Structures are given as structure tokens and as C-alpha cells.
Image (cartoon, rainbow, N blue to C red; front, side, top):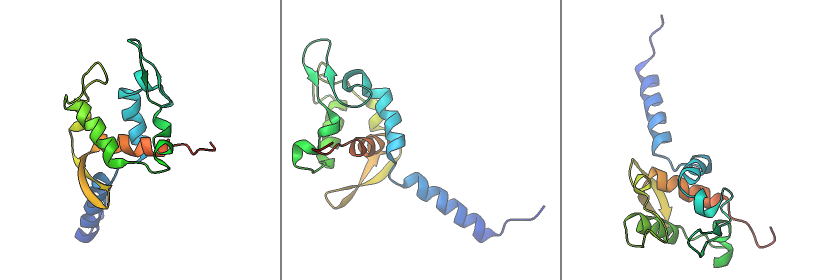
Length: 135
């Protein structure tokens, strides 16, 4: 059996760590969305009528409602606020698991911000499902 050179092993470990610490992609976020959000926002994120009255907002048009700008900080704050009990559970349930886990860097208003990986993944997914005014 041939030994692996130490430099190759070190580079492999660095590459693996870089992938773990990188911003998760929309596919990872879609799984988080499916596990936490579809009951109210439907599987396409287009909102739905809630059983107690009211309506869950259409998450595919967040940017459209803000003249094309996807407000990352606002979205993270909203989800984080619900999860930390700052908003009534009748409006939106708590998301304890979304607010835990390894931290990954997320660019928020030009600043790399440590964010729990599940929350960052959900943000990436929500950003990916935005539709344009024409579409």
C-alpha cells in the first residue's frame, strides 16, 4: 500500500473544512424549508390560508415587494425573532433547531456574519426562489 504524502493529507483536510464552513446552498435550504415551513407557506413557498384565519405570506415575492432587493438581514432577524419567542407562536412557531449548530459566514450588508448553518441554508433557499415581476 502506498502512503499518502503529508501535504496531500493536509490539503484534503483544509478542503473538507472549507466546504463545511462555506455558505450552504439552496438544496440544503430546501430540506430545511420542507421540514419547517411548508405547513403554512406551502411546498412552493407561495403562502397559504392558515387554519386559524389569516394568511401566511408568499415567500417567493419578498424581493419583488422590496423593489428587487432581497433583505437578508431582515429575513434572518424575522426567523430568528420568531424562534427566540419575540413573536407569538400563534403567528409563527419557534425554530430551535434552525438557531443551533455550526456557524457559517453569511454576507449581510457587506459584513460576514456568523450564522447557524440551518438558518443560513434556509436563507439561501428563500433567496433562490424569488420570482421577478414578469415571472
